[in-house]
Image (tube, rainbow, N blue to C red; front, side):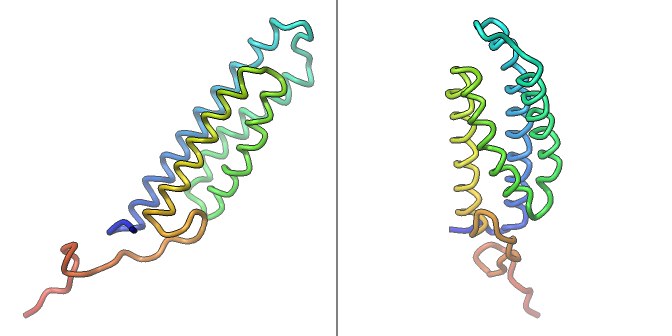
Length: 135
């Protein structure tokens, strides 16, 4: 099943993907607080890695309108999940975000026809009201 207007559906899903990436970036900003309370503490390297990851996640939300935006967002799910190595709770938080991301890709596949590929043109037929007028 594809959407009657795949271009519009793809645009809406790109907006949802951008919102998820921003939320992921904000969630990563909470990790240093949890790490600081552990025995190892929060070192400069860990803090720098988390801040860079957060910044990259937030900036990648801006490239979702580009053709490779979804591929970049999908690749960033791996380092997000690996934040669980720094704080155990992030396995669950990042896991939830990864599941949401997979769900978005699945919905995109159903509505647009592919997870990462280009979006096809809108279908025009009499059934969806887009047919040519007859005179």
